View 1 (cartoon, rainbow over the protein chains, first blue to last red):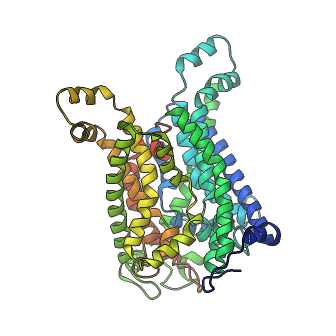
View 2: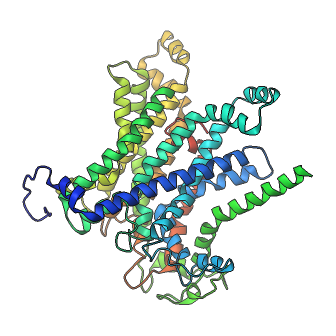
View 3: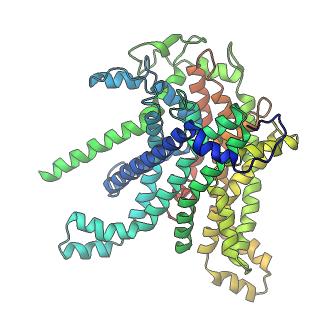
Length: 250
Length: 284
């Protein structure tokens, strides 16, 4: 193991070997990361799409309501994280209080290994669903009215209109929104640091946060560097897809 | 009848969504105005059931974070640091990106698109994967815990998407205007200064403001690269979590103070935010 104090020695692929076959925590953290990214992106996409479809029509108060959605994703993530730390507090937090109405006993949201990752996913959903919603709302406005009307005259059902008219028009904005969110979810750091610090233990650590722990708290620089390369390689996949989409659009 | 049921359902759904969006924010504001008596685990924060309305609008938390208190230092120097870093970074980034975007949309050279995508690729890179070597570079330059280190870093973080957004604004301008300016004897830089710049000014301002917001919110690099003198507001807020406990009131007051300018900035450019955040691919 190489630390900041010792002179570096060439070790070939040893750091990667350690990660893949010796470090059990790394495997857990990799699993956490995949769960975190998949759960947040899927939930944010579905809720965002539902909201966009629901709120695309004009109604009273829309011009006040839509800007409200900008607030969660613009405000300082550290402030969001610390605020949720209070909301999740098992003894005095409002979440425990609200859930007691529906008979849910107090849950140690961020202090138990079972729920800590889930708690982080909820914060991410609160923070970033507005992004999906706003992008998809903008995408919906590009759907051709004439095509929708024509399909209505031809007797298409709501589902058919959505599937064969709306979705094809929105393909580009959906791809861009999902890929950007996916890339950024892999980079999550601020909220994780402020809500759970990856804990208890490493139960809610994801790859970007675990790299920080290994590098800056354990000073195991070789392992951390190897890990950051693994993270980079994973992110390359959605990035390439995003680049291809952007290239096609420009 | 069915129409009325649908309308009721619509507004009920809307109300539920609104509560979910607003409640955490409301809780933050509320906590900023509650008062804990200036210590750990005391006051209105530590009662069950939690109070959803303060007993009085206390301003003690704000006075503590502005003037310093028993357990907290004033965050005013941190706000000043954040402002210096945010504004200087945004100014430099916007200047560089405008020129780069001009070159990448208006000049002909080999592999132009590849250069543009290489610049964009820096936006994709997870910062944590460069932070270790980066820390040693900054340390080698003796810049740890200084504002220039943060400004330098935030320029690197902000240039890629700024260039990309500005490119989309430049691409939208029809070439005809520039070409007629050339015919009238305007030089290349003359058309840039007299025609492109004025016409893309809204886009340039949006980029400027968005850069300020991202600098203002950035936590990870500030956390790793600074320790006392150059601490920015997000890092100062995070310091309210201590081993003794968390000072909920001070932290909420500092957060509120910290996010207000961001909300103002975001509201100014709200019509452009979708476009900025999707790298110009979706026009809001």
